[in-house]
View 1: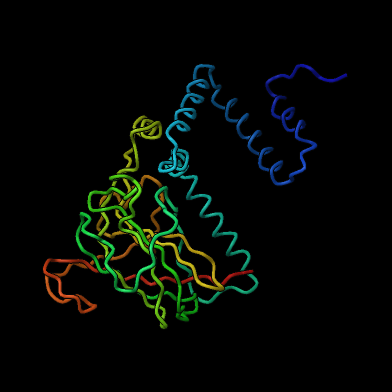
View 2: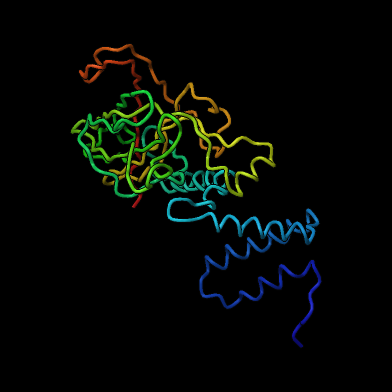
Length: 300
């Protein structure tokens, strides 16, 4: 006789058994674990009906905040540390895949992509200035892209972007359709890159929605330290999503999305008005940031 009624302790297993005919093994594995952990959580905290309804309303509100320019669920994942956990697991898998033939040297660490990546940034020549009269202090970025053994990677692509001096990204300003403070560059024959932008300021993640309310209730601030987003791609090497963090930025020790890695922190040197490292004559004080990237050879 088919069982019609289940006790609380048996419900998780009942749900899992209903997936017995799932044709997708990975989907079944993930959902089985999710059901087990979710039911264990509900029992562990003795979840009350009104609390569960509050959770449903919270998730509904997150969905209503999402559009083509804002993803509240990414923000939720970031602020709960889940995005960085996924990044860490991916790096661990990559290291395990290369264990039989480990790369020489230390690869640059990855961090979160964030919600403000915009596909299709213009490709500009090395040395270009992408600040375009945006607020912020001028900064010269330069360094080299190599493999983990130190071999220069010619033609590596750097996709870079940041918020402005007030902490706002182009997506958050104006008509939301005009790119600013973002571009793509290709390294020269010796793997070097250089370009001008601004010294990124710290900023709050969008906190006017349900995730912001959650952070306040948790007693947390919403701020991220200043950073330059960089995605790197080079033939025969793994794609890298990372940041260059500003060493003296507020909140460097308490990033709201847990994305800081000590190896990604760079010194932003201050310079008086005058001739910059690339020969450009600056009429105002400026900064410079040097950072070398080391990419892992592809395991494919």
